[in-house]
Length: 146
Image 1 (tube, helix red, strand yellow):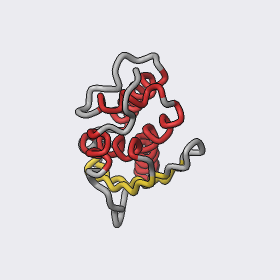
Image 2 (image 1 turned 45 degrees about the vertical axis):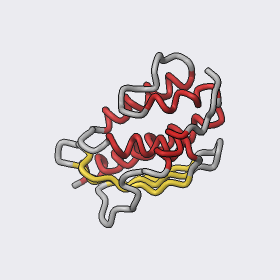
Image 3 (image 1 turned 90 degrees about the vertical axis):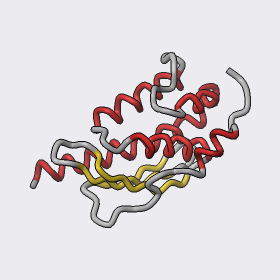
């Protein structure tokens, strides 16, 4: 799978990240940094009583692939549970590692396929998912205490 890594579609996604703001009073929050590439993602979440994501805030400092991945996540995550997001993340990771057949079923995920052969970019692509999953876990832990 060779070809341009930073395609027009990747660049389009990278500049169209939804929910690119921090939330004032989030139910859960997480900030993660990739040791591999230095990318950083902060995620704030608001959740329903049943654990579905109802609002999301993202602050991204990453390459265009990490930003594109965050845009895909941001466009699809509202209404999803931590399990839903983890399943999408794990399927994407399997694809990037070569053991999955497609990057995922969410719209635009096929645009990430060009990064499969660029292992140094995988961490940036997965980081937005990891941050949202961690923020949802933080919210769930706070709900259990309350």
